Image (cartoon, rainbow, N blue to C red; front, top):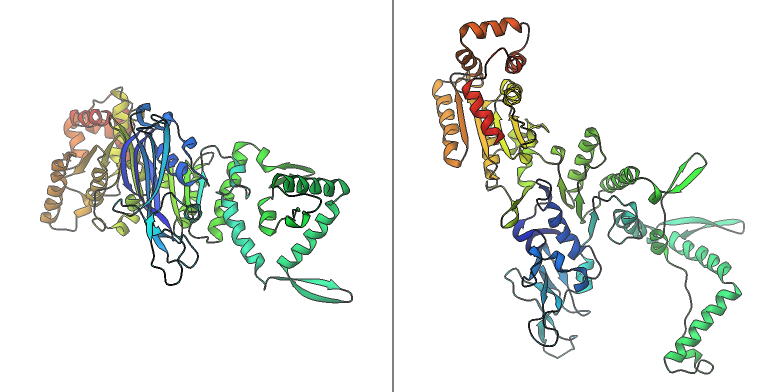
Length: 555
């Protein structure tokens, strides 16, 4: 199964220099205007067209619109594409495709833009292929492959779904579409000689291949279309073509034959239109609203998943568009299933399309003074038990990938109370883009923190010194765990320890009398709910420690 394993981009739009490994399922996450779309566009621009020319780029595509900069986009393919320049010639592996938009440095065209397209080895050296077709007894002569052959591009089945959910782009008439991939496979099955249909012949029936029967019927249809005016036009074109080629159309008509032939089954499939009927009303699906077109595009993706198609590379921008949360979850499952046998690269603002256990599939895209950067986790494979984290699957916890600042807490009390304290201090945590993530217990704090820090997300940890998570363990075990949490300070994290836990800290801050009054004011509630109600109540003060934490969180 072919996939893009690596992407190198220099001086393309907001990207000064980017070098990233691309996983099988790749979620590009980041703020608006960080450059996520530019990463997708870099791939779409070079792989999503039959022919890539200098006209596909302009100065607007160059970083800072600097005419002195050369722009380069290179993809590494795994496994390498197998290419043979001549029939019966040995195949050559092509692992890297490189596109460089530059300018002529000398000569009459100096300063004019040009596009260099090259097939390269992983070390950057040009691919060598046979210079001419091999002949028996003749030694092989090799030369650099001067360009990227169309046959190589044809082996990279890219499907692009942008933010403009145009159904027309996904119909079979579009080469890089979902339906085109589906119908190409259906046509191969259609042409199978064993795929037959019964045809009546006199009093009997016989089995005829469907492809053969199609040609019989389509030839009859074309015969009906061949009116005298049609045949007159056909003869006219043939006569003028012969004249243009230097032949006498009256005496040399056998030198060139020209006629219109009916299309084959694949052409027929590719010409199909999708029609929506509601009662007696029919309309082309391409004329429907964006929401309906988006629903149909998603339906095609789900059909692709059901048929277990393999080997495509999907580029999808914001798959969550137009979808309710439940539908987002459903589509996220579909895309993950598709990614088992295809590559899926997407941009998203939704926590349903990322997952803490699958943190290695996330690229955090950030805009810096040096342009767009893509940050990947620095944790080695197996450094954290992904299976353990799967027990804590929760879209709210996936928010950590979207946070400008992150506070990790072990329980609901802090998660519910701190936003209320922030309101009282006129701090807007949502506007600041920060998140408080409850990790499902103290034991998970360390893993979540290591993941967040591996992406260079500004992270803080708040934990109870004496937690019920360790109630059945020796005190030494929890002491050692506390030390490992405190040690995260050396990794750049902020760490606060509640001694011994949240409620006693709140009681000490408010004073015994005020704390008891607060508890009496909100009886028959859980600890977490009571913590939130006390935090929101203007009758009670804001503990200095809690104020310090929420001010850090607000930045």
